[in-house]
Length: 425
Ligand code: SF4
Image (tube, rainbow, N blue to C red; front, top):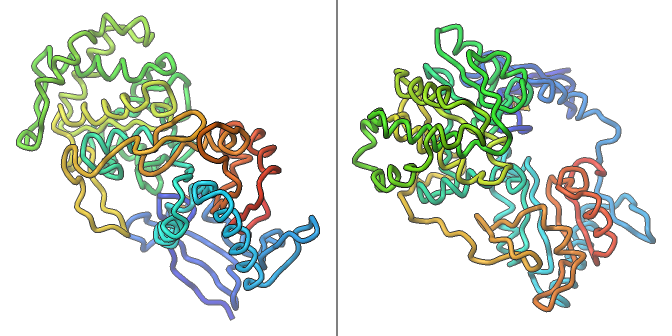
């Protein structure tokens, strides 16, 4: 006999409510939960595929342990014994930092993913931690850490109430967005326009999201920071800065005015390939809207000066009084952390406490760039040991990391590897 179970989709940050059909121990169907107050029945094709995933014959039902060169089915006890022996041997021979841990994107979408990896890392004592976040969003974490003292205090646009959304480097009509926690992001953009709000999209490509917008700015790739700085310049120059209730909490506004002094629209127009008049219009529209939010995503992060662009996104929200107010950019609360956010300027965030061994990349949030993992395995230096073992949790870096082919080759030189994944990836 089948029954219904209400769950939250763990496949991305949108946290859509699911209504699952369960027969015995098998999920046989999934649809959107119309009573979910947040997602209101929306799910994307990934969420709708839960029944197919649960019944997929390729999904692993038991651990696999390599014996005589072949991965063979094993009991959980045998698997844990193999992991303990393999990891312990590497730590004893080469030290804790010779164990690399790769944390994939799903770790931040589940309660277990948020709770258990810190315990694993504390037990191992390794600094060789590589995450999916370093591929596409670390600039935002760093700018939030420096600005608010908390790398996870990332303001998200209040899509349901804003009057004006300036969106950079994001195509939520294809991706549903990220660093935003918005079920049915496309529907929210359409609702914004239907209630008379305006949508401006800054993107080198005429994406599906750009086609929906009131205004599309086809900027030259990698120049978002210049555009945003010029908009800040215009706000100062034309007396449009109005920080409202934020004023008592702000430090450094005059230093900011001075720092923006050279970034006139005319100075950046050629580099951005956006004419100066348009830049002034963007700034004026942002200041004039009753409420507004600037939102920058992957295209503004994965470029030179991505941290600067991420910071300037929040600077514009601050200068127009739109940070931390309804209709603007709001600080969400985490499900597993009751620390007040933001923590306060310059408190609680440090950058570069250690560096990667080969290319000396600074850590951020205790994480090193996933793009450096292959060289940390295959390159010897005078300093420290190469990585000799890898624990990959919900990660498939051969396919998803930059230079995955090099990582694929490097895997062959490891003493030990464990992959935690429902599929043989
Ligand atoms: S958008 Fe799709 S993958 Fe993300 S939570 Fe909703 S149903 Fe799941």
